Length: 232
Image (cartoon, rainbow, N blue to C red; front, side):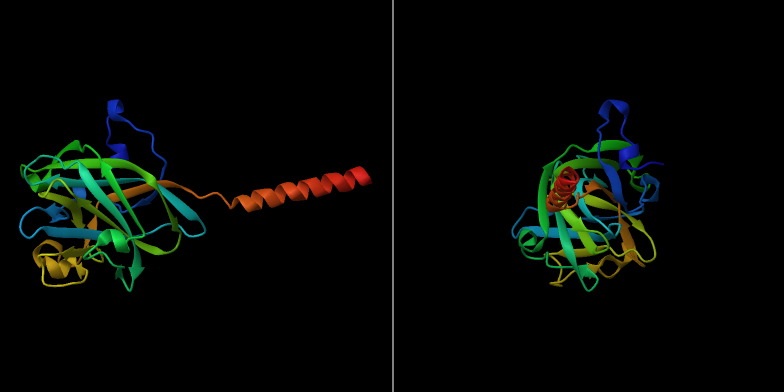
């Protein structure tokens, strides 16, 4: 079994930054999936799945790539996605429903062709695809809880791959559901995520360098030392 960065064939290999967060869901772990897409119609239906993560403390991190797993019920991989980063609010994403782009810390839109993993969802005909997208960097503080939501905007039958696991905290919101707030997947889809679900994703990036003023102050210090030595 493999996941994302390790699954690409050499002909498709792309050099990404280091993995800074791994939600530890392998292709072989996938046993649930929930719609996270815009569904055209009258009225339009908007659904989102989000999962929480915490980057290593002690640094501010620049997220440069996002990687995830999912599949389409009609076996045509979606190619246009919105990626949302949310702050944490008492164990749920801050904002989202209604106008996600207005309440997210950052929103990134990407066009990406999924790579067929060669695996299917629970032995069905639905092919599981992996996605890896460079994004404009998003700076996040290590040690704080954030939420990642991935939503297809051109594949209304696209679903984000999940792993049923105790303690999984993935959340769901849908305009076609009665709640106006984020809901535990176990409450929204009890048969699929009873006890909790975790979404299949990785984040790659780099630590943000110290502020440039620190570099400048170091240079000033060196100049001062040189001057004192010259005067002596």
